[in-house]
Length: 224
Length: 234
Length: 42
Image 1 (tube, one colour):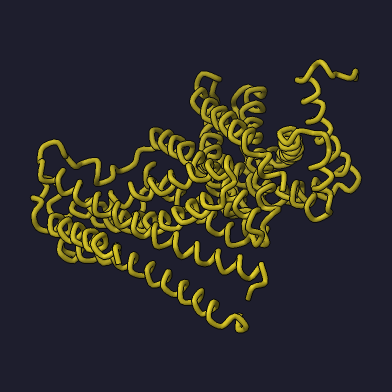
Image 2 (image 1 turned 180 degrees about the vertical axis):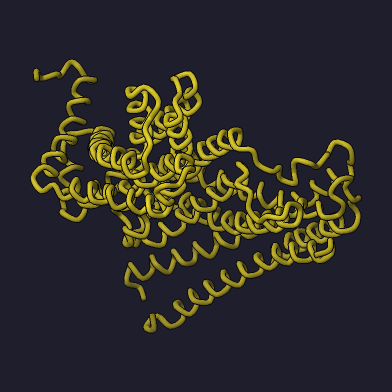
């Protein structure tokens, strides 16, 4: 199976990056060793943003071309993005608890990631509540666009609110990166690993959705 | 009103007006929505009064939040039926076939929601001021315009959420889920602005909040302008 | 919680969720292939 080498590569890269995260990267000056969570939390966040941007783009392509494939891509991307968004939120709050004593800060970035999560949760639940295939694809596409647009609006509102209400800084604000190239390297390795993981999960999810769609089609045509 | 085949802008506004008046006429016949909004306003403000302790000296801190929570809930609980009831009654096909552009339908429904929310606020705001014992120290016209802008944004959200939800099997459950991501972008500026309005402020002090709400409005309308026909037409 | 415990927890959360997701996908695929094999039972 030609997927084997790709799979092996993905796991190898992630293994190497885990090593770098735990052992190779040096301890940070002000945060000690705790900061290493950053190397798992941040790539997850980036990947979830990537996933939802993809959903946004695929939604636009669907509306313009009406090819069902784009709807499947949008849906698969949203599902996997939801997974990584959940990971981001949980790892972020654990880190916040440890570094700052509280699980949730209402920091603008945290808050808009939470809203991102809720938006795509709405996207996924909406899809589950519509039975007609064409309607589901069409309305989800509009929802995918709306959800994406709502994120910057929420982020800037939350950021503005933060300027009027003082709040403790997130641990990331204290990290200094330009200094240690090994940290940058670790971050790069981890990001590559997580992104490859995302692409692989996206591919698997897409195939699963395709299979499910095939069944629906076959049933509808009365062949079974 | 003259026929305006050579004035496309005017006929668009006419279409919006027609939708608005159609729904208003329906509402005037039965008045179920406006009565329940009035009762809800009283109930919400009483609940907030009891919860915060009516003689609470810090009540001013909470006033903006309670005000907008009441308005938001009126919107979500009551007014997201604008499209759903068309679907339930079967008149959605009439809307689709009518020679009215989809954008006009959306704006008409938004205008209707805005009118009802505005009328509702006429109950909500004064009863809040009486029960929680505060008043707006700023110029009344400013208060009305700033609150009005916030309400308009919520009306836009209510209209599009209603249109999306009408296709769902679980309408009641999906409405909060769909509204939730859209609301913070406008609710936060509105709440901040209201706090300043209660304390007393001129328009200069409100410029950021007004800009936020205006950007929200323009961005939402721009996106919906392009995408709404896909929502409306099957 | 010392650093090792923290990192262990966070990595297990990450990989744990990924694993759970794969399990979920797997069960979905299973459901589909049973539907394929025994159409009357659907």
